[in-house]
Image (cartoon, rainbow, N blue to C red; front, top):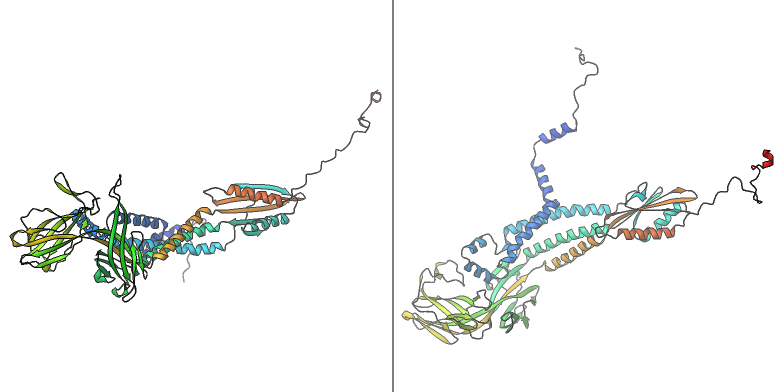
Length: 560
């Protein structure tokens, strides 16, 4: 066995030990695994900064839903917008900007915001539960040096002075903690509770919205006077079910439209503006049930078995009777025309006659509620049907309905059709227009009015309302309540003690703690008797009563 000797010089430093910096470098040199990446992503997602960014993105993403017409609320206006903007409309539709709140990208922002708030709020709730049971911190040695200070000398002992302060603050519902010669009090935990309630309610609001999106549905249908519909998928023009809604889950109600009445302002600067809408309807909650009547208005929906039926639009449906070239009546019905967006309610529509022979017929028309001649141009002077007229452009050929490709009922495919050589002219109710080349005759027999109704079922509506109210209450609570602390110290001073009181407001944006501190110290001063004034000290010698200077004084004879 060989012996080893230390060749280092006395006092020379040995090999350095691994310090914290070296340990950090070795930790950084380790590969960043998937678990670490997931933890990092979760910390970033649940940060308050990310939650605010997602909330801002959600607000920005909601802007197109309020500026553009939506299929969920007014599909007729969506079709009108696309037809008026043939270049921009399909692009917006491709990015689901006409179905913003049902778009996948909107759902992604919504879910990320939900997860971010859940990650922020739930750990904070546990921390608040722990802090709610925690005692106030110990008092400093000199409480009077805090931003709010007060000092008083009292004849009571330190124990009695602290007991009086404890009794006063306990009556004010302060949370107390006592120590050797000091007292700590704290109040205002409801501020943090209100802040937490606001975030939990916001989380509940998002949950309620998601509940409605999963278990609710929304559907639209156009009803002409005299027609009705049953609450089935096949009866709707637009149907948007939730993820967990099956066709058999719809409530089995039925609705019929008996009549619609619209009133407009007839004079003044607001002439032509609507003043009231009213739809007289009948409904059954289920097949075989009693029939009830209801006056459906814009802000007065019909509630049937948890579902709501809203009046969201109205228009005119001209009635046409079309006789084909063989003399057979190929069409005799009301065709809804869509408002063109003007205040005079000029409406546009398409009439398709697939059963006409020998050629199918199609018409592109304009309906004028109050037709007038304005300088050789036909226009409408008022939205009410005072002088209804319709103007048609006629086509004959193949409508393309047999190809299997879906077509809009508000657009006419003229690719395999030719325009008939007849000038369009206004037709009044009862007037007819004979088509050239023996194609037939079209008669404008009158008009009906139609309404657009929306049936919605949202089980999250009431929870959303409750969550919104609770969120507002929590927000107000966090603004009104102040978090404040008081510290009382007492030390012996002469026959009594010296009492010091210090105050600290942790959140006093609106102010008010200064007045509260002054009131508390005033009450405490009334409860603590002041220390007695010290007695004046007697001098070493007093002058004699006869006014002489005493024995220390010498007379002139003594000096002699």
